[in-house]
Image (cartoon, rainbow, N blue to C red; front, side):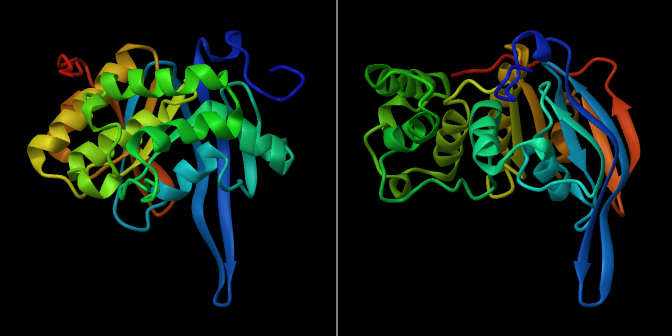
Length: 250
């Protein structure tokens, strides 16, 4: 980790997500509630991991801890060589923008910006690329996810699958080592969902670490590892012997 608390390239060469005995407790009027309890998990660079479990099992809380949106009540959290809980808020926002790409179930594209402008937004926030390169990079990412021809359109004019591809391109804007996605295909038909999972597979093959909360059991063979949560605890970690590596089509 460098002096700014950001991950170095050497730090992300092996294990990029390292959680040790992580507990997250919320305090409500009815009393304390443990959303995560003593969770220990390591994820390597280039792994594609599914996180499964019933509603309320702690899946979204786990993603929030990993992405620095929320902090653990106890335990150790190291993400790409950095410790998000130990960062100041302004430093944390910059770290998150450069380290974690987030893909949401409902896309969260800004409706008044074009698809191209949505993809450029993280680069503007983190100032990761010179101004003259931002549009060129955004177009290249839209090409990578197969929707360059939609760059000048507003999100509302795109199909659900196209909007999710745009959201993935936005998540890749700052070339983060880690992509997390919370039910990214929950509102898509099965054929479009398969194409999105294939896109994630291609990203994992290129070295990105992919962590996806999903209920899509029909695509389980695509994942190298499946982590199952129940009542805030990991109750199973299944490693696929021969995870399917379907070739991604643009």
